[in-house]
Amino acid sequence: MNATEPYESAKTLDTFIGDVASLVGSIDDEHEITKRVAALLSALLAGGYRLPPEVTRPSDEHHVTYPLHIAPDDSWSLASVVWNIGQRTPVHGHETWGVAGIYAGAERELRYLKPASSEPCTALTPAGEQVWARGQVTVCCTTDDDVHAVTAVGDEPTVGIHVYGGNIGTLNRRLYDPATGAVRWFVSGWDSPAVD
Image (cartoon, rainbow, N blue to C red):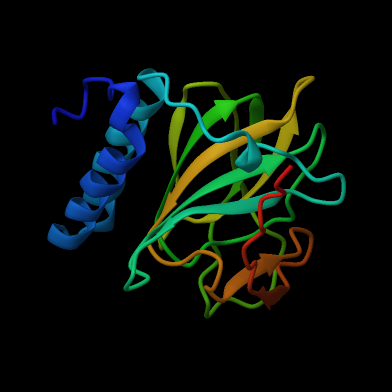
């Protein structure tokens, strides 16, 4: 498939998963992978793909991450990430590459320069702010540039379709205190969709 053509709705997710698996299995450069995955994700969103309702439901307590596909070898994963109105993430890293597309709502992303591991703890340096709206896709992280925080903005929950270079629910990742640069490690885990 040409990555600039929208996916046809009937076979979208299976086709998308096959296309991403092919890229991950054949390309080693994470910058090239993220560029190509971003094009595929843009086509998926442009094609009108509809997520099942159970993986678009927010939680009142915190943002949720629903697994849509985890590669058998954990080389990549696909998730629906949902924030209720006004919810935000702490400042965090991913320890891998990632691409995010906005399926519904909008999010404000605050980026920070990734500190070198040899640097003493100091306040993080802001690196820009962007609001991403429905249908837009961003390379949210590569291993050399992956520190940010995200807030749901607007008057509806924000739903993102995210592709990561690893099983994001099991990766050991960093949380940052932006004022001091102090790091705490965490594993996010996966959330289970509620079934009616």
